Amino acid sequence: MSINKNSGSEISLSDAVELTKQFQNKFPKEIKASFVGVNSLNLILKQEGCVGIRVYNGYDVDLERFAPVLVGVNAEGNDMTDGVILDKMNPCPQYCDPESPLGGDK
Image: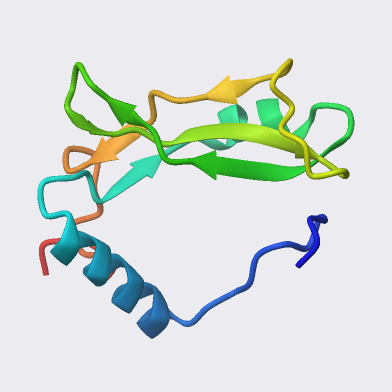
């Protein structure tokens, strides 16, 4: 699979629910999700040569929880580590959609 502006695949809601439930069952004490705003995402995406975003799984030892790290990726598939890198997103629980089938309380 090559890295390009079309990498990633759309999935059904039922597939998404299954993936998130499996994660939540395996890691019940971890955050369910992270929210990042469009303006922050655009800081990465608007960098010259950026074709997408790579999401690294990080861990915040102070907060003792999963902490995703986002970095831009160029057409060669290389991380743009000299550019914008994001962390400190809004975690769920706390900033959740309680009605969402992906991780809400319903």
